[in-house]
Image (cartoon, rainbow, N blue to C red; front, side):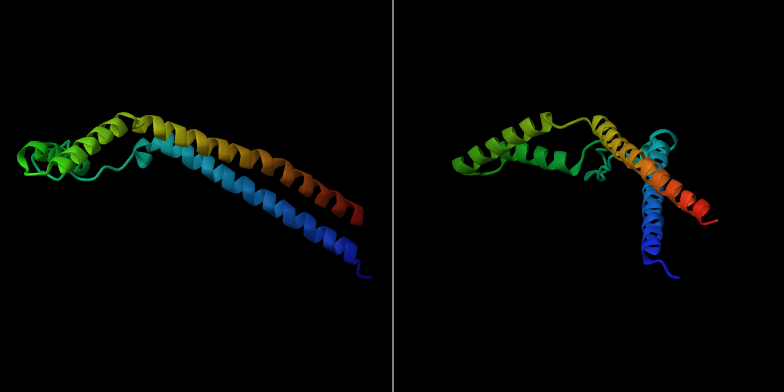
Length: 145
């Protein structure tokens, strides 16, 4: 005789065991990836910088070249007083913003810590979820025999 309640219970237990197993796998994969990018390939998540505009200036970025050009334009370009004031204000704001920028190494470290906390949370949730439901499945299998 077909027992619908037992069938639904079995489906539920296998489904949640599978969900727990998947979460455990994805959390473990994430932690392994994080370990590899931290210790084996540390340049894998280094920030990307655009190529320089001027071939002779290897350390200048396009942003710095623009700012340098605007700074030179304050004295050499024929601008109205209003435009000169606006440009000076923009350059001042840009310098304040630039000083407030976070070191890329610190930001990479923060990102790694966020990822590690997410993966640990996934694993800590998945282990009990998987073990509890898998234990119930084994217990039901023993009771049927």
